[in-house]
Amino acid sequence: MNESARATSGEWVKSERQLERERVRRSRARRSASIATGSTIVFIVLVVWVVTNSPGWPRVQEKFFDPGEFAKALPDVLSGFLLNIKIFLIAEPLILVVGLLVALARGIRTPAFFPIRALATIYTDIFRGVPTILVIYLIGFGLPALELQGIPSDLATLGIIALTLSYGGYVAEVFRSGIESIHPSQFAAARSLGLSHAKTMRFVVLPQATRRVVPPLLNDFVSLQKDTALVATIGPLEALRQAQIHTASTFNYTPYLAAALLFILLTIPMARFTDHLAARTRRRRGA
Amino acid sequence: MSLLTIEGVWKNFHGHSVLRGIDLEVHPHEVVSLIGASGSGKSTLLRCVNLLETVDDGAIFLDGEEITDPRVNVDDVRKRLGIVFQSFNLFPHMTVLDNITLAPRQVHKAARAEAEEQAHDLLARFGLADKARAYPDQLSGGQQQRVAIIRALATQPRLMLLDEVTSALDPELVTEVLGIIRELKESGMTMILTTHEMGFCREISDTVCFLDSGVLLEKGPAEKIFTDPEQARTREFLRSVLETRRL
Image (cartoon, rainbow over all chains, first blue to last red; front, side, top):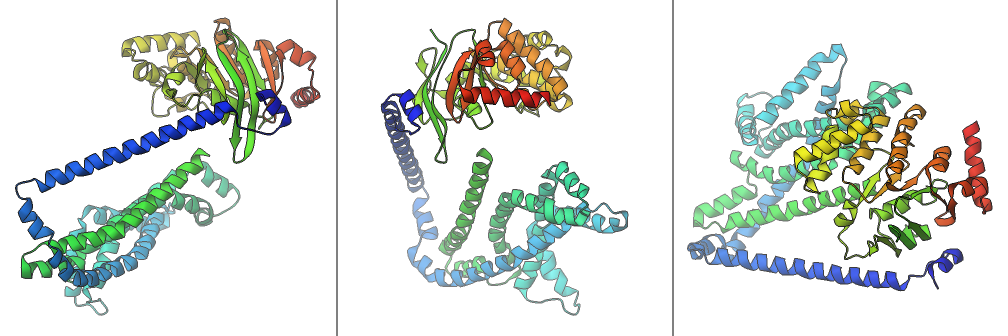
């Protein structure tokens, strides 16, 4: 059947030309895939070769890649790692709440609430400026030293407070950039319907802004997952601390490798999930 | 020989056929208009020619070379085509001059001085000489669209594709953009355009094609299509469009 006949009959039967074209596309796709596989194998072989042929490799292998030490340390490191996960799971929602509230506070334009706005600005300035590890020290050792009633003494709890304060500053800025990326016409449309500033934020601006900032937020979460290890510096027995204890008794660094492995296992799914969300947004925009 | 040949082009989106076997020939210096209701496939056809969409069947030839062949380098094909979009799509972070000279410098390897001189010439020719250093958001819609047309022209394309270039403009700004297209025709540029401006379409087109649900229902000289169309669907479409105009 020729083209015009198919057009008038209204049904589509692939022409010889199209079948040939699809055959070419498939063979090109196969070729791309084999090139990708080939270059990956070459790359890996090269890296392994360079590392294993380095002069210090035998020592490194013994000190960092000792299977016996790995097996011995893993249970303790793993039990410590559960504390990392706990810290992460508690800190994360707190950070979201703090970040969102601070971002909203920075957007308030009512004169009477100026102190709140100023406070929010000062908060982000300070906690984004101070290295996380210092915040953990200051909160971990300084807060209990005040000897106030009701101040928690549990080290993990203090670590959670410190991480929340530090990351809250970052996340507030992420939220704020999301809010500011929403076109003013959306604000105008909502306000012109009679919605108050708060209702405009809640029903129109934030739902759009939140969707837009999901990828950078997840990026901060990945960062937070590994920064839970910084809490080790004030003492609770999490993964890094457990690895340190093992290393201190044997002078073998394999336990660190075990800890690193666990962190990677936790962050990779999150990173892939971020990629997946970004790809989905791209597809929607493209459609 | 025809400059562009479209042969039995099909395009499907989500199981729905938007183009159902389009055949069309465009000769050098010819101006071809595509008319039809929204969703009839006019824009999709232009996007297929520019390889922004891959066709699902059929073939498109430019200067006798099949550009829908998967082995063809799409960048090489697009070097020979100019396309202008309904929504201008100027780069907001660049001045008018940089918008125009980007492709000549980066793709066609022209020297900056040479590219800028050519850009200034084009700007002067189309009454925008004083806007070279302006940014797109400092221009009116009509000016932006004229810059977009100049940007497409700067690479000296064999064929210009104009996709409803006046649809996003206020009526009083439409005239200035139509003026530019008229000038292009006089300079001998080959063009395919989709438009809702029926009066302009009738004036400027050598050939008018009426698309209906992805089928090229009727094709002929502008005078013939507008005064004595063969198909009832074409008559109906023109009547409804012209009626809206009178209201």
